[in-house]
Length: 581
Ligand code: ADP
Image 1 (cartoon, rainbow, N blue to C red):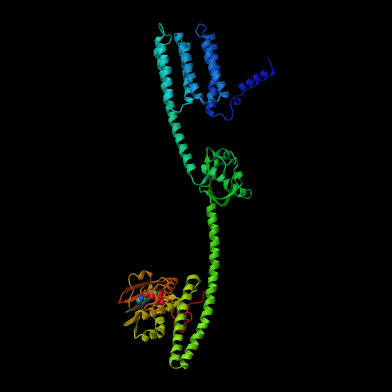
Image 2 (cartoon, helix red, strand yellow):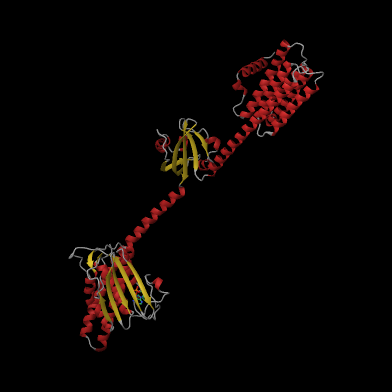
């Protein structure tokens, strides 16, 4: 005998004594179980034969049949190590051998006239075969067929035994049928439970894989990944098999590992998930993906498992960066705009003041046509200054930081005071300016300059858009509000134009042939000033009948004589707003 053969034989013996070496790590558990059945059959079949030979020497037991069945089991077990085809068809081959073995045992019982020892062996074999058969079972039909074959075959053999069997056929039939039925029912039950478990697992897996976020499950004791969903594979670039068993720290940047560990491994299992942001996940290529992390810890089968959900926030981070940049640019533009506004305000108002002053002097000193020209220059410059003031005020209200200085004021007093400027405006056009002040003490907390600007805008519009009739200023109050009402008997506002009334540069009559001069900014400024002081403005108008604007502010009761800020007004009586901040 050559040395390699001795070596092979020794290895085979050692392997036979060591069941772990009998299997390969890659083998599926079911294949391993099949091999165990083969090994058991190979050992048990000759053993039983030996026992029979010793205890019941008179029994008929053809050696060729016993060795043939035994060899078939051995061959199947061994072949499963070498041939892929055998492994692929293992389940079917096992079934064939189980049928063959059963047939052989039934045959043995029959030729021995159902000797009690053999009948007992047949019962035992059938039970063992049923267990083996059900191991590879996914559905109950094959087991049903096998039970029908084995029970039917046994009973048929019993019936055909001449002249009369050595066991009670009734008791034997009852035992074998009862065993088969019980076994069939318990197998069905087991299959139903298994099916339900599989469905639950499949549903859980489908949901996990459908999640938009990457989910990984880490064993809190070993720190190794035990599960991961599809999204985790996509995000990390690792396949499931690589992720499984991987230490969680491989997915984390070195500088963030301490933070991750603090999130993952906490002493107590908290009810609420722990959230982490500004973290990164290291992919298979070494790239770092910014993520938001939500961690929960759960006790599963007695051991804590960490469920970590990663959300890829690459897009959100990019948008945030873009937003910050855009805000910085906008702030820069705003600063620039404010500078321009302040410069413009100074550069344009100064020469205009000179033109106004000198044209007035010229108009006084000159005669005839030249005096007329000087007056036109003066009027046009006043108009220009008014427009300029409106544009600058609007810009200031829109883009600057208008610092209003609210103080308690009695609205009726303010209206009375403003009449000295407003009445001449009305009288110039032959209109009557009336006041109706039923709430003389009603007070509100307002910026004085802003209130006068509102009043002036509304009254000058009323004068501008009224050809004959009157203008009425009313101050009323209820429990919570103070109302300033400016009514005129002028041209009114069309229903179409009303929704656009407070928009900038909007005028009812448009184009160069407009009926009324103006910049279209007065009401926009008014509305903004009212809003800034928590007020509301409403309008009612009938074309050809007249218009009523109602401005309301929260009412406030304050002590008498509280001083308000000093009003600043230009020559046109327009209250000037504070400079742009
Ligand atoms: P402007 O008076 O400089 O044109 P406003 O913003 O003050 O600008 O007014 C916008 C438009 O609203 C006016 O052009 C006019 O068509 C309409 N309007 C405002 N007040 C009245 C009013 N009392 N009667 C009729 N129309 C008015």
